[in-house]
Length: 350
Image (cartoon, rainbow, N blue to C red; front, side, top):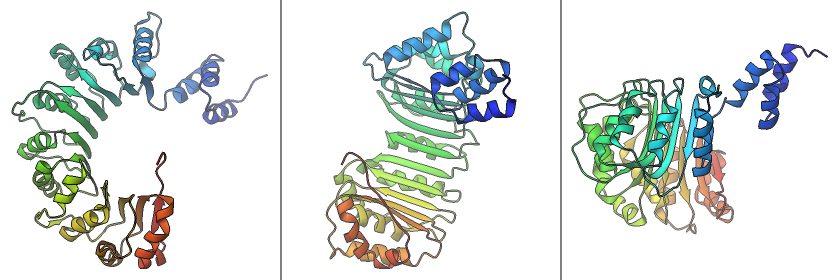
Protein backbone atom coordinates (compact mmCIF):
# COMPACT_ATOMS: atom_id res chain seq x y z
CA UNK A 1 0.00 0.00 0.00
CA UNK A 2 1.39 3.37 -1.04
CA UNK A 3 0.91 6.25 1.37
CA UNK A 4 0.65 9.67 -0.33
CA UNK A 5 3.65 11.88 0.41
CA UNK A 6 1.46 14.55 2.03
CA UNK A 7 -0.03 12.01 4.44
CA UNK A 8 3.38 10.53 5.25
CA UNK A 9 4.79 13.98 6.02
CA UNK A 10 1.81 14.75 8.25
CA UNK A 11 2.33 11.50 10.17
CA UNK A 12 6.04 12.12 10.57
CA UNK A 13 5.60 15.75 11.64
CA UNK A 14 3.19 14.74 14.40
CA UNK A 15 5.31 11.89 15.67
CA UNK A 16 7.06 12.63 18.98
CA UNK A 17 8.46 9.13 19.56
CA UNK A 18 12.15 9.06 18.63
CA UNK A 19 12.42 5.28 17.93
CA UNK A 20 9.39 5.52 15.63
CA UNK A 21 10.93 8.46 13.78
CA UNK A 22 14.11 6.44 13.37
CA UNK A 23 12.09 3.58 11.89
CA UNK A 24 10.29 5.98 9.54
CA UNK A 25 13.65 7.09 8.15
CA UNK A 26 14.22 3.53 6.88
CA UNK A 27 10.99 3.20 4.88
CA UNK A 28 12.03 5.02 1.69
CA UNK A 29 14.03 8.01 0.50
CA UNK A 30 11.17 10.48 0.90
CA UNK A 31 10.40 9.26 4.42
CA UNK A 32 14.11 9.21 5.23
CA UNK A 33 14.57 12.90 4.41
CA UNK A 34 11.53 14.07 6.35
CA UNK A 35 12.15 11.82 9.35
CA UNK A 36 15.81 12.84 9.59
CA UNK A 37 14.75 16.49 9.48
CA UNK A 38 12.32 15.90 12.37
CA UNK A 39 14.83 13.85 14.35
CA UNK A 40 17.33 16.69 14.28
CA UNK A 41 14.95 19.66 14.37
CA UNK A 42 15.87 20.30 18.01
CA UNK A 43 19.21 20.21 19.82
CA UNK A 44 20.99 16.89 20.07
CA UNK A 45 21.37 16.56 23.85
CA UNK A 46 24.40 14.67 25.13
CA UNK A 47 24.29 14.45 28.93
CA UNK A 48 26.93 12.80 31.09
CA UNK A 49 30.32 11.29 30.36
CA UNK A 50 29.01 7.92 29.06
CA UNK A 51 26.76 9.69 26.55
CA UNK A 52 29.58 12.02 25.50
CA UNK A 53 31.83 9.03 24.84
CA UNK A 54 29.09 7.17 22.95
CA UNK A 55 28.28 10.24 20.86
CA UNK A 56 31.89 10.85 19.84
CA UNK A 57 32.32 7.14 19.04
CA UNK A 58 29.26 7.32 16.77
CA UNK A 59 30.60 10.36 14.92
CA UNK A 60 33.96 8.65 14.44
CA UNK A 61 32.42 5.50 12.95
CA UNK A 62 33.43 5.18 9.28
CA UNK A 63 29.79 4.66 8.24
CA UNK A 64 28.44 7.68 10.15
CA UNK A 65 26.21 9.91 7.98
CA UNK A 66 24.88 12.24 10.69
CA UNK A 67 27.12 15.26 10.14
CA UNK A 68 24.88 17.15 7.65
CA UNK A 69 21.82 16.77 9.90
CA UNK A 70 23.16 18.08 13.21
CA UNK A 71 22.53 21.82 13.45
CA UNK A 72 22.04 22.13 17.22
CA UNK A 73 24.17 20.43 19.86
CA UNK A 74 24.01 20.52 23.66
CA UNK A 75 26.75 18.86 25.72
CA UNK A 76 26.35 18.60 29.50
CA UNK A 77 28.92 16.84 31.63
CA UNK A 78 29.90 17.20 35.28
CA UNK A 79 33.13 15.23 35.21
CA UNK A 80 35.92 16.53 37.44
CA UNK A 81 38.35 15.77 34.63
CA UNK A 82 39.21 19.21 33.19
CA UNK A 83 40.64 17.80 29.97
CA UNK A 84 37.64 15.72 28.88
CA UNK A 85 36.50 18.19 26.22
CA UNK A 86 39.97 18.32 24.70
CA UNK A 87 39.15 14.91 23.21
CA UNK A 88 35.62 15.91 22.19
CA UNK A 89 36.05 19.20 20.29
CA UNK A 90 38.29 17.71 17.55
CA UNK A 91 35.64 15.07 16.81
CA UNK A 92 33.02 17.80 16.33
CA UNK A 93 34.99 19.78 13.74
CA UNK A 94 33.19 18.17 10.74
CA UNK A 95 29.87 19.60 12.01
CA UNK A 96 30.20 22.47 9.56
CA UNK A 97 26.49 23.40 9.66
CA UNK A 98 26.27 23.78 13.44
CA UNK A 99 24.29 26.92 14.31
CA UNK A 100 23.51 26.31 18.01
CA UNK A 101 26.20 25.05 20.38
CA UNK A 102 25.86 24.62 24.13
CA UNK A 103 28.57 23.39 26.48
CA UNK A 104 27.78 23.03 30.18
CA UNK A 105 30.92 21.67 31.82
CA UNK A 106 31.95 23.86 34.72
CA UNK A 107 35.17 21.96 35.42
CA UNK A 108 36.29 21.81 31.79
CA UNK A 109 39.46 23.68 30.84
CA UNK A 110 40.34 23.69 27.16
CA UNK A 111 43.97 23.39 26.14
CA UNK A 112 45.54 26.04 23.90
CA UNK A 113 45.42 23.66 20.93
CA UNK A 114 41.74 22.87 21.51
CA UNK A 115 40.88 26.55 21.83
CA UNK A 116 42.68 27.28 18.57
CA UNK A 117 40.75 24.46 16.90
CA UNK A 118 37.49 25.78 18.37
CA UNK A 119 38.18 29.31 17.10
CA UNK A 120 39.16 28.16 13.61
CA UNK A 121 36.05 26.05 13.03
CA UNK A 122 32.31 26.25 13.74
CA UNK A 123 32.08 29.51 11.79
CA UNK A 124 28.36 28.96 11.24
CA UNK A 125 27.48 29.24 14.96
CA UNK A 126 24.77 31.81 15.66
CA UNK A 127 23.79 30.90 19.21
CA UNK A 128 26.39 29.94 21.82
CA UNK A 129 26.21 28.97 25.48
CA UNK A 130 29.42 28.30 27.41
CA UNK A 131 29.42 27.35 31.10
CA UNK A 132 33.01 26.39 31.73
CA UNK A 133 36.39 27.51 33.06
CA UNK A 134 39.06 29.43 31.20
CA UNK A 135 42.66 30.15 32.10
CA UNK A 136 42.11 33.91 31.69
CA UNK A 137 39.43 36.38 30.67
CA UNK A 138 41.40 36.93 27.44
CA UNK A 139 40.93 33.26 26.51
CA UNK A 140 37.17 33.56 26.92
CA UNK A 141 37.04 36.80 24.92
CA UNK A 142 39.16 35.45 22.08
CA UNK A 143 36.92 32.41 21.81
CA UNK A 144 33.51 34.11 21.79
CA UNK A 145 34.71 36.80 19.37
CA UNK A 146 35.77 34.25 16.75
CA UNK A 147 32.26 33.50 15.46
CA UNK A 148 31.31 36.21 12.95
CA UNK A 149 27.64 35.17 12.63
CA UNK A 150 26.96 35.09 16.39
CA UNK A 151 23.50 36.41 17.31
CA UNK A 152 23.15 35.36 20.95
CA UNK A 153 25.78 34.65 23.60
CA UNK A 154 25.30 33.13 27.03
CA UNK A 155 28.67 33.21 28.75
CA UNK A 156 28.50 31.68 32.24
CA UNK A 157 32.22 31.34 32.80
CA UNK A 158 34.98 31.60 35.36
CA UNK A 159 38.70 32.08 34.82
CA UNK A 160 41.64 31.10 36.94
CA UNK A 161 44.17 33.87 36.30
CA UNK A 162 44.03 37.56 35.50
CA UNK A 163 45.05 39.26 32.28
CA UNK A 164 43.98 42.35 30.39
CA UNK A 165 41.31 41.45 27.84
CA UNK A 166 42.19 41.90 24.18
CA UNK A 167 40.75 44.68 22.07
CA UNK A 168 38.48 42.24 20.22
CA UNK A 169 34.83 43.22 20.11
CA UNK A 170 31.70 41.12 19.88
CA UNK A 171 30.31 40.42 16.39
CA UNK A 172 28.24 43.33 15.11
CA UNK A 173 25.15 41.15 14.62
CA UNK A 174 24.88 40.09 18.28
CA UNK A 175 21.52 41.01 19.80
CA UNK A 176 21.24 38.84 22.95
CA UNK A 177 23.78 38.80 25.79
CA UNK A 178 23.52 36.70 28.96
CA UNK A 179 26.45 36.91 31.40
CA UNK A 180 27.19 35.11 34.64
CA UNK A 181 30.51 34.83 36.41
CA UNK A 182 33.16 37.49 36.79
CA UNK A 183 31.02 40.39 35.60
CA UNK A 184 33.59 43.04 36.51
CA UNK A 185 36.07 41.54 34.03
CA UNK A 186 33.51 40.79 31.32
CA UNK A 187 31.78 44.16 31.49
CA UNK A 188 35.10 45.96 31.82
CA UNK A 189 36.08 44.39 28.51
CA UNK A 190 32.79 45.38 26.85
CA UNK A 191 33.09 48.96 28.09
CA UNK A 192 36.63 49.19 26.73
CA UNK A 193 35.68 48.07 23.21
CA UNK A 194 35.71 50.90 20.67
CA UNK A 195 32.35 49.77 19.27
CA UNK A 196 29.44 47.84 20.71
CA UNK A 197 26.82 45.77 18.86
CA UNK A 198 23.21 46.90 18.98
CA UNK A 199 22.29 44.57 21.83
CA UNK A 200 18.55 44.39 22.49
CA UNK A 201 18.41 41.78 25.27
CA UNK A 202 20.73 41.75 28.30
CA UNK A 203 20.67 39.38 31.27
CA UNK A 204 23.23 39.84 34.06
CA UNK A 205 23.26 37.12 36.72
CA UNK A 206 24.86 36.83 40.13
CA UNK A 207 25.71 40.53 40.45
CA UNK A 208 28.13 41.04 43.36
CA UNK A 209 28.48 44.16 45.50
CA UNK A 210 31.70 45.26 43.78
CA UNK A 211 30.03 44.95 40.37
CA UNK A 212 27.04 47.25 40.93
CA UNK A 213 28.69 50.32 39.44
CA UNK A 214 30.02 48.65 36.30
CA UNK A 215 26.70 46.85 35.70
CA UNK A 216 24.78 50.10 35.35
CA UNK A 217 27.57 51.72 33.36
CA UNK A 218 27.11 48.94 30.82
CA UNK A 219 23.31 49.22 30.90
CA UNK A 220 23.70 52.91 30.13
CA UNK A 221 26.04 52.07 27.22
CA UNK A 222 23.45 49.86 25.50
CA UNK A 223 20.36 51.80 26.63
CA UNK A 224 19.55 53.14 23.17
CA UNK A 225 18.85 49.67 21.72
CA UNK A 226 17.80 47.74 24.83
CA UNK A 227 14.34 46.14 24.83
CA UNK A 228 14.76 43.39 27.45
CA UNK A 229 16.69 43.70 30.75
CA UNK A 230 17.04 41.00 33.42
CA UNK A 231 19.04 41.39 36.62
CA UNK A 232 19.73 39.01 39.51
CA UNK A 233 22.04 39.35 42.49
CA UNK A 234 24.60 37.13 44.15
CA UNK A 235 23.24 37.21 47.71
CA UNK A 236 20.97 39.08 50.11
CA UNK A 237 23.83 41.31 51.29
CA UNK A 238 24.26 42.60 47.74
CA UNK A 239 20.52 43.18 47.47
CA UNK A 240 20.51 45.18 50.70
CA UNK A 241 23.43 47.31 49.55
CA UNK A 242 21.82 47.79 46.14
CA UNK A 243 18.82 49.49 47.77
CA UNK A 244 21.10 52.35 48.82
CA UNK A 245 23.20 52.30 45.65
CA UNK A 246 22.69 55.62 43.90
CA UNK A 247 23.32 55.18 40.19
CA UNK A 248 22.68 57.88 37.60
CA UNK A 249 19.23 57.88 35.98
CA UNK A 250 19.13 55.90 32.73
CA UNK A 251 16.72 56.56 29.87
CA UNK A 252 15.91 53.34 28.00
CA UNK A 253 13.45 54.47 25.33
CA UNK A 254 12.70 51.06 23.81
CA UNK A 255 12.63 48.92 26.97
CA UNK A 256 9.69 46.50 26.85
CA UNK A 257 10.53 43.93 29.53
CA UNK A 258 12.18 44.32 32.95
CA UNK A 259 12.89 41.40 35.28
CA UNK A 260 14.43 41.59 38.76
CA UNK A 261 15.08 38.28 40.50
CA UNK A 262 15.44 38.63 44.27
CA UNK A 263 16.22 36.18 47.03
CA UNK A 264 14.76 37.64 50.20
CA UNK A 265 12.53 40.36 51.61
CA UNK A 266 14.05 43.08 49.43
CA UNK A 267 12.40 41.82 46.24
CA UNK A 268 9.71 44.50 45.80
CA UNK A 269 11.96 47.28 47.08
CA UNK A 270 14.57 46.40 44.44
CA UNK A 271 12.01 46.72 41.65
CA UNK A 272 10.95 50.11 43.00
CA UNK A 273 14.58 51.20 43.24
CA UNK A 274 15.24 50.28 39.61
CA UNK A 275 12.03 51.89 38.36
CA UNK A 276 12.89 55.11 40.20
CA UNK A 277 16.07 55.50 38.14
CA UNK A 278 15.34 53.66 34.90
CA UNK A 279 13.02 55.73 32.74
CA UNK A 280 11.12 53.48 30.34
CA UNK A 281 7.80 54.77 29.05
CA UNK A 282 7.02 51.78 26.83
CA UNK A 283 7.23 48.92 29.33
CA UNK A 284 5.03 45.96 28.40
CA UNK A 285 6.04 43.57 31.18
CA UNK A 286 7.63 43.71 34.64
CA UNK A 287 8.67 40.50 36.41
CA UNK A 288 9.96 39.89 39.92
CA UNK A 289 10.02 37.34 42.73
CA UNK A 290 8.23 37.45 46.07
CA UNK A 291 8.83 34.28 48.06
CA UNK A 292 8.58 35.51 51.65
CA UNK A 293 5.61 36.61 53.74
CA UNK A 294 3.76 39.60 52.31
CA UNK A 295 3.38 42.42 54.82
CA UNK A 296 0.42 44.58 53.82
CA UNK A 297 1.98 47.51 55.63
CA UNK A 298 5.13 47.60 53.53
CA UNK A 299 5.56 50.92 51.80
CA UNK A 300 7.34 49.22 48.88
CA UNK A 301 4.11 47.61 47.65
CA UNK A 302 2.31 50.95 47.52
CA UNK A 303 5.29 52.54 45.78
CA UNK A 304 5.40 49.73 43.24
CA UNK A 305 1.73 50.06 42.39
CA UNK A 306 2.01 53.83 42.15
CA UNK A 307 4.82 53.57 39.61
CA UNK A 308 3.32 50.78 37.54
CA UNK A 309 -0.26 52.04 37.49
CA UNK A 310 0.86 55.09 35.51
CA UNK A 311 2.63 53.11 32.77
CA UNK A 312 0.00 53.12 30.03
CA UNK A 313 1.77 50.51 27.92
CA UNK A 314 1.99 47.93 30.74
CA UNK A 315 0.27 44.66 29.85
CA UNK A 316 1.62 42.20 32.40
CA UNK A 317 3.14 42.09 35.89
CA UNK A 318 4.54 38.59 36.38
CA UNK A 319 5.24 37.57 39.97
CA UNK A 320 7.02 34.36 40.93
CA UNK A 321 5.65 33.48 44.33
CA UNK A 322 4.05 30.75 46.46
CA UNK A 323 0.36 29.85 46.14
CA UNK A 324 -0.53 30.92 49.67
CA UNK A 325 0.96 34.39 49.09
CA UNK A 326 -1.12 35.19 46.02
CA UNK A 327 -4.18 36.64 47.85
CA UNK A 328 -2.03 38.98 49.95
CA UNK A 329 -0.17 40.22 46.88
CA UNK A 330 -3.46 40.93 45.12
CA UNK A 331 -4.57 42.95 48.16
CA UNK A 332 -1.31 44.90 48.08
CA UNK A 333 -1.70 45.70 44.36
CA UNK A 334 -5.45 46.42 44.09
CA UNK A 335 -5.31 48.65 41.00
CA UNK A 336 -3.12 46.22 39.08
CA UNK A 337 -5.39 43.36 40.17
CA UNK A 338 -8.43 45.30 38.97
CA UNK A 339 -6.73 45.88 35.60
CA UNK A 340 -6.27 42.09 35.37
CA UNK A 341 -2.58 42.33 34.49
CA UNK A 342 -1.19 40.29 37.38
CA UNK A 343 0.21 36.89 36.42
CA UNK A 344 1.43 34.47 39.08
CA UNK A 345 4.08 31.81 38.55
CA UNK A 346 4.50 29.08 41.17
CA UNK A 347 7.98 27.52 41.16
CA UNK A 348 8.21 23.77 41.36
CA UNK A 349 9.95 22.02 44.22
CA UNK A 350 9.31 24.70 46.85
